Amino acid sequence: MYRPFATLIPRLLLFTLLVPVLGSCAVLQQIAEDAARNPRNAGPSPLLPTVVYQEAVLVESPSKTMMAAYYCPTVVPQTIIPGATALLCRQVFGDPPAAAAMRVSFDLRFTVKNPNQFPIPVAELLAAALVFPDKTNQSLGAACIAFCGSETVGCTGVAGPGACVSKSTDIKSIDDFKNAAANLLVAAGISLLNGEKPTFVMPQVVKDAEVTVTARFTFGPQALLQVLYEIAKQSWQQLQNRQPIEFVIPYRIEGAVWLDVGSLGRVAAGYGPAAGTWTIPTDALVPK
Image 1 (spheres, one colour):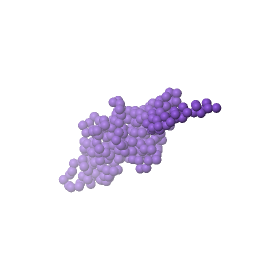
Image 2 (cartoon, one colour; image 1 turned 90 degrees about the horizontal axis):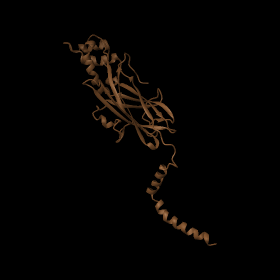
Image 3 (tube, helix red, strand yellow; image 1 turned 120 degrees about the vertical axis):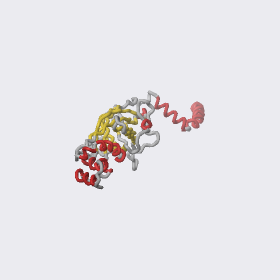
Image 4 (tube, one colour; image 1 turned 60 degrees about the vertical axis):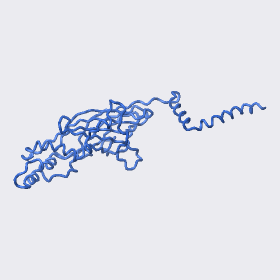
C-alpha cells in the first residue's frame, strides 16, 4: 500500500527541479524555436515567390499644347517690344499653366506569383528612374515605399531606417541611388486591382495565385520641368513658328520588391534595368 507514495516522491523532486528552469523566458523561447525546427512538427517549407517586371506606363501628363504654353515665354527670344513675346505665346498656345498642373506620373506593373498555400504581403518597393539616360542632362530619381498594415492610421508609405536594403549584391538597395535628385520621384501608392486607387496599405498576394501589382510614381514638377526645359530651349524655333514641340522622355527603370514569406522572412526580388520612352500626348492624360 506504500508503493504509490514511494513512486510519487521522485516525481515531486523532478517537478521541483524543473519549475525554475521552465520558468525562464529564454528557455521557453529556445524550446519553441527547437520545436519549429523539428521536421516532425514542421509543415511544408515555404516556396519562393516570383516577381516579373512588365512595363512602365505613362498615366498622367500635360498635353503638348500645355507644354508649349508653359515654355514658350521663357525660351522664345524676346523682341524689342517688352511683353510682345509673352503676348504672342498666349495668343497661340493660351495662358501658361501652373507648375502643379504639369505633373507626369507613371505606373510600374509587375506579375507576382505566390506558390504557397498562404497569402504573402508586399512589404517594400524600390524604384529608380533615370530620365534622358544617354544625355549630359540626365536626371535620376529614386523612391522607397514601406507599406503599412490596414489598421495603421495616416500611412504615407514613408520608409524608415533599414527599408529597401538588400544583403545581396545582385539586388539593388536604396543606398545604390545616393546621387538621386531630391523630390524628382515621389511614390503615390500601390494597387492589385485594375482601376483601383493606389494606397500605401500593404497588399496581400493571395495563396497559390498570380496577380498584377501596379505601383504609381509621380515626377516632382519642378525637378522634371527643369530637365524638360532643355528640350524646349533647343526647339524654340518650332515655338516661334507656332508649332508645339514633340516632348519625348527616354527613361531607364530598375529596383526591387520585398515580400514577407512566412518562415523565410523578408525576401527580395530585383527587376530591371528596363529602358523605354514616354511621349507627351496631344491631349492631357488624367490618371484613373
